[in-house]
Length: 16
Image 1 (cartoon, rainbow, N blue to C red):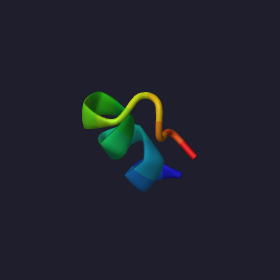
Image 2 (image 1 turned 90 degrees about the horizontal axis):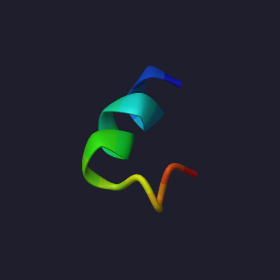
Image 3 (image 1 turned 45 degrees about the vertical axis):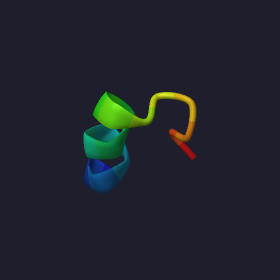
Image 4 (image 1 turned 180 degrees about the horizontal axis):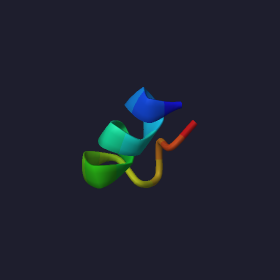
């Protein structure tokens, strides 16, 4: 889940 949060910063649409 931590990885998702990191990506959400650059890819909020691809939070999945």
